Length: 160
Image (cartoon, rainbow, N blue to C red; front, top):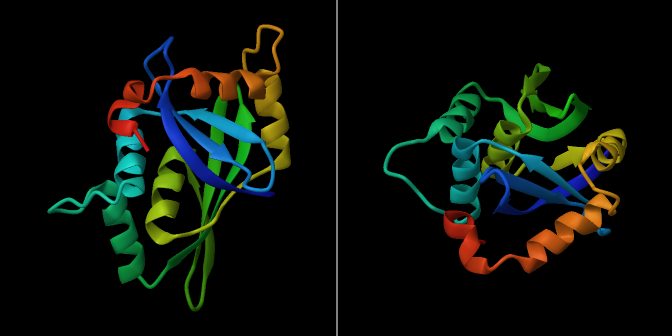
């Protein structure tokens, strides 16, 4: 497993879908994950320290876990099948440890709220670069070039 950080959010100009960018802080390896608008908003609001008067869904999840005396110990992006990513949220209490299936976007939104580390399996990173449409280009370079070429105003509410 490779420890990753949330590098940012952007918009896919072709589909207008949000893209979550995870990055290995010790290298140039990145993992783009296309996510839903609601999950992107949940991630962006946490990254930007936006608070709401009432708990949003991922805040509620954190509050429920804390009330049950569970902590999120880590989040893992474990698999990529048919262009769909899979993740686990690892929980622990004084007497129990659990791994709960999750969409990566929800797992990461929860990890940000609980300051839990995010990991991606080496196999997922390898498969991601081979499954990404690259049109003959190196996929990682393509996404890096896309991010660098975008006008910051194109980030809209996902601006970091």
